[in-house]
Length: 577
Ligand code: PEP
Ligand code: MG
Image 1 (cartoon, rainbow, N blue to C red):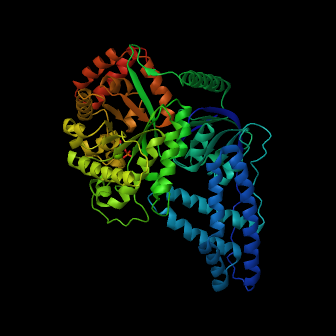
Image 2: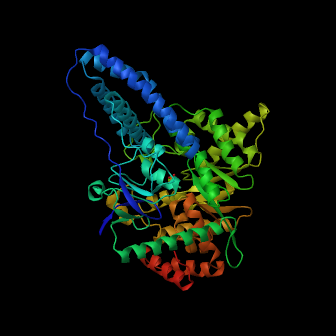
Image 3: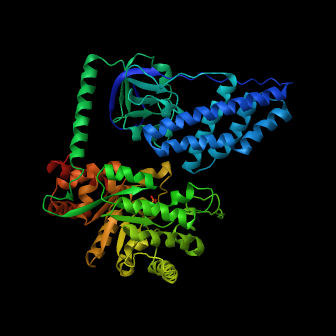
């Protein structure tokens, strides 16, 4: 028996035999060639074969996983057709007399380095795609046939260094019970894939491929981040028990899917999802979210090589709105700047980018860009219940400026006789302390607030939200944050037909749910997977009790005291998280 700890990438417990998926390492031939013509031919034969393989993987991926996974392989095929790639390899062969496989290696590494250096997770993920394509072409040049995951004859846990999109697309999904890999993070392809296949995964185990042999009995515990190799009978029984408990728990959550998020004494809460792109809607629906509380539209911009056109944006917003005929869809206008950049929009390097030209500040400067987005949202607004939300508002002046531009867009559409929802709701994110403190002023101009605790903590506590060194100070339970939240909800309570929601991570934290409910929050927006658990908590508590708990918490002195008190209070109410 042997236990190792890694990164939790996908929850659940899997128990099965290990299948160590080792790829044959590609040894590039670094000798110079005299026959460049023959190498060029080898390269083109391999390109053709790679195309055929990618097409069959693409079709399998579409059939088993959907259009999106299929699109990854379309992108792979595009690399094969990219003149920079093809001509780059040809040039290495012709000019430097490299063998075909070495030339592919050199050019792939060059591409990889460019993408890998980009801070943006989207582009770093593209780096992995490029490596995947390059390796495929090299294998085909060298005639290497890698182990086949497409026909497994028993249930297995896949053990690998890492898994590429090609590996996961080809794999026999019915037989794969879990993943355990040497490398990978919560946002790596393997993690995303495991979550979408809903199979447990623990990644970042460093040397799991050396520790496990094919055929070893294994447990992947995606609840605690541990893997257990050849467990004792006693351990096995305990894991079987935990597995059953988790499955019962999921079943219980699933039964809540179509029920309202309503407290025992009848306060109805709106539970909605945070999404980054239209495809995320499926997860929100599946988990019982009644709408979208935060559509981070910046991904539409970041996932594109050019500024997305009004038409492209319109289509994306419309598809999300149509998915929720009865629920709200809060579309946040572009929040770029800070750590998020657009390759096609030159921006100065700033000393303090998070305090610089970010979000609404940038949109008020780049009015053309802003208007394109507002027109697209307005045009889509007739397809559902659109709410427009401005990010990073620090004062009422910015709200007025943004609304003036919105009204200009409305006038343009009127003149063009294009329909839009004239009663479209307009709101702001409360994520800068000044906006929370002046909520009573700002609320005069808007229909709703959504508290962005991710930035509100960063700006209130002066803690860089990405800096590990100071992460111990980043505490949404800090009394200062609770007071700001209370100030915002107290203000909004006084205005009719107005609501306050929250779309920062805190809204999806089970430990915070009773507190936030008691502080008067009406709408909770979170990643889809968090919705069922928060619903369960809301349905197990009385609003009147939650208010008393929040009131007491507001009088405590430290985040730790507050956290302890809340945990205790929840236990007394029999709420287990
Ligand atoms: C927030 O700041 O809480 C928020 C939801 O926005 P983002 O995380 O996109 O900055
Ligand atoms: Mg924010």
